[in-house]
Length: 153
Image 1 (spheres, rainbow, N blue to C red):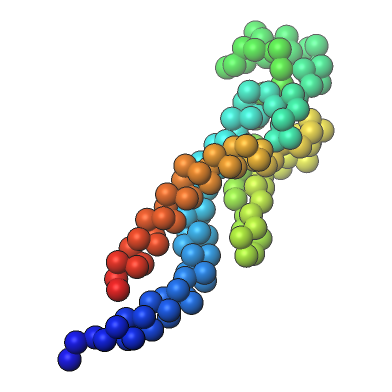
Image 2 (cartoon, one colour; image 1 turned 180 degrees about the vertical axis):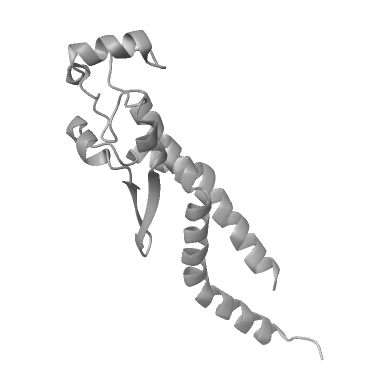
């Protein structure tokens, strides 16, 4: 027996009712899948000598002796700004913590983080970069999910 127009409409209405919850689930999966990209954005700030708040890490926080050592023996020979690059364990300890709902927070598990906080706000993503992440990754992934979801009708 063929499906009638009212049955199709009812099926569509049920799918529409379920969509918000399914989109939230999909969004969480996509954020988890691409967490590394967000963490890399945050690492990029630090490697460039900036905190998550956009402020430059104070170049005068290196002691003269450490700045000289870093310039002579450091893998990264710049001393014009603090980049925390020699603290590779710190940068690799970043993780994206799910706080519930659609809330996330970047955390660092390296023991040096407490010491490094003196440089300012180090963990987070600036609004402009987050907007770019949403536009270039999240939006296309969710649009594809919606197309697949409704193509099953």
